[in-house]
Image (cartoon, rainbow, N blue to C red):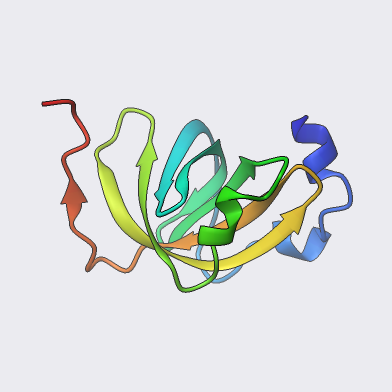
Length: 112
C-alpha cells in the first residue's frame, strides 16, 4: 500500500529544504476533528515532519488541510498540537508537511 502512495511523488519534495532531514521510521497518529489518521513519519527535521497517511476514501483527510492544527502523536512521544503546512493528495492517502512552531502545548495522551 505504501509503495502505491509514494509512486509518482515529486522528487523535488524529497529534497532537503532549509534544515537537514533525517529518516524516521515511526508510526504517527493525527487526531483531527473528523477522526484519527494513522500513518508513518517519512522524515523529520528541526522544523517539522513529513508524514504519509493512508485514507482510501479521503474522508478524514478533509480535516487535514494546510493551516489546520492537529494533535500529532509520534510513537513513544507525548502528543503535541502542531500545524499542517502543506498536503499532497495521493491515491489511497496523502503526504503531509507538519511544522513545529514551538508554541503548541504538549498534550497528555495517556489514558486516565
